[in-house]
Image (cartoon, rainbow, N blue to C red; front, side):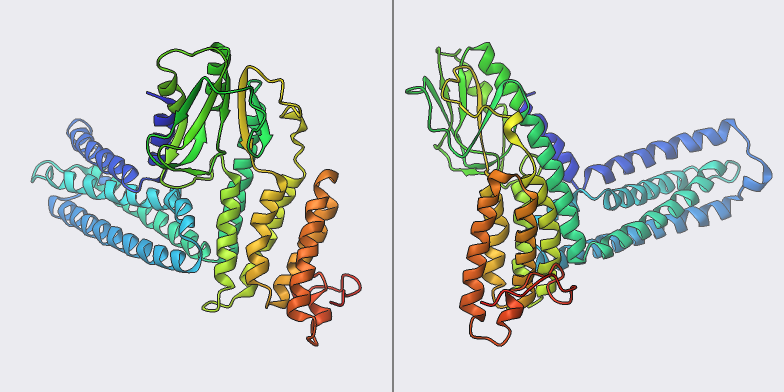
Length: 433
């Protein structure tokens, strides 16, 4: 089993909506048989005993209630999917697929259904599975509690700010994982494409079919490079969609074994779209999508964009304050053995976060004010070598504000930084544009 297959399998199990309910149904059926057998070898106290008619009624009611609740959960989920894709971003659905509450309530309710249905077959005039009848009621109660928890989580997550917070949290986790990968002793990371390769590659691994690079086995690739005394250079960073036939990996050094291409491909997970696991920029992409959708004329909700900028700033501060000097060699021209990984630069993250929101939000005073507050805050928080990129974005913002608000009576307001967009405390002299 290759690393890429294990990665795809783990991701599939995490995002699958049928595995947990299936496990719950099988467990319910198994426990139903075990409970009916237990009733034949143990006798409960009188308070936990049921007549055959009562047991039939209770179990039939539990079966009907479980089926009804399952249908209600599915209906609510479909409505949530429709609202989320229409209000936020289709990319957000990956987080919804992984919600433990949704899978848990389905697993418990389906397990309760199979458990109760199995017990119904064992209710006889002189043999009643008393323990199982009591457990069936308890399982139904647990299912109702989980349904309320799921409904509460789903309703609260329909707020854009809650979605932005979830995505930002996932982005921070992905950034930490990316740093752990960059800290591998066999890996050398470079900003952007690697242009200092030593001559012509001895082997070029091409894409067999198009797909997005979802994750890399950095440790495995580095170990393979050292085991074969080669320099392995990835052409594309995590998150790129690479078409079929495009070069994916260049190998420099001695000629590797005949199975080199297969081994190298097995350590790169491909899929139809990006994931956040090793791609913090994808988290930024999702948040920006939510913000620009809120700024569209059909929605016209600039306050949502301002709330998204709050969490974008939080993630950008983490990126801007991360010193990669401990994770990379600045001079990679003399690297002969190891793994070279292209990464996104600080300016790439900043442009991704700001450009489209600035363009779509130029007509909203609170958006340009919040953007200015974010950029001014980042200018004082990021590493010194990254402040030039922040200043460049401030110049671009000045130009946009001047073009849109230069002759307006509200030009002074548009040129002022405000962390709340509009309504925050006075933060300093206004910048007249």
